[in-house]
Image (cartoon, rainbow, N blue to C red):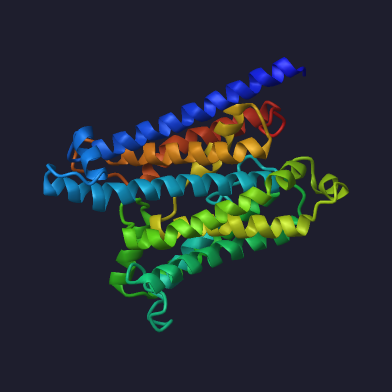
Length: 355
């Protein structure tokens, strides 16, 4: 490949990044404008700039409802997509993501224990009550996600077949779901109702106080990705090859475990179990940028994930209607056909990892 070809490819990729940033700004603007109440864009700008002359009810809707909801959606899209990319690379499986491998189920178990087992824990983990409660909820969800992913990694050392590993991940997910059902059976009705509402998935329940906890946690976990591109690229060719390059595979696995568990666990704690974003977005990025280089894929999935999550939230709001769909309904309608396409594509002998 000559210098001119490299220049054209780099120029095209730069253009794609600019296009993604513009698209993110557009879906954010639409999400601020549209909803059960349509607010003109100029009035939104006045509120954001702190100017007067806007209805008090509109100021409340924008500042206390739509802005934190959009920030949560952006964080969720970034986190789940980055987590999915790491796991697809580590397990070398195009269907790996926090949801399919049972990671989200582990996080859900942590939240279930925090919510429905709060009385047994002396009220230590009580969601949406105070800073310590929010931090405890994140810790519980991340710990649950980390335990399941740790078990998968442990089994992965003995199982080389990606399909078998995927099935085992599903079994871990079913096992944790069974434990959640057990907690539901023995819990008080009000706690079961709180957990059920949380399990539908929503970006609108996160407050500014909770974002004070969520933002630094997500930023920390994504910051870990800055140390991973070289190692993740090496893992694409197998662990043996990575070791010949002097890569500390054990250390890399631990960093991925921490990053993916915290990203998945923190979002699951506050927004509920959000499916399919983690599995679909990395494939969109690979096909859009025509590369498997994680130096490009990591920022790409972060941007695309944010766009997909904000767009999904916009659809869930059903602009012009008083009804709001659970976010999982929208992401499932988007992601399920995509997973089917991935499976059919692989049956024809193609793979997303050889671009």
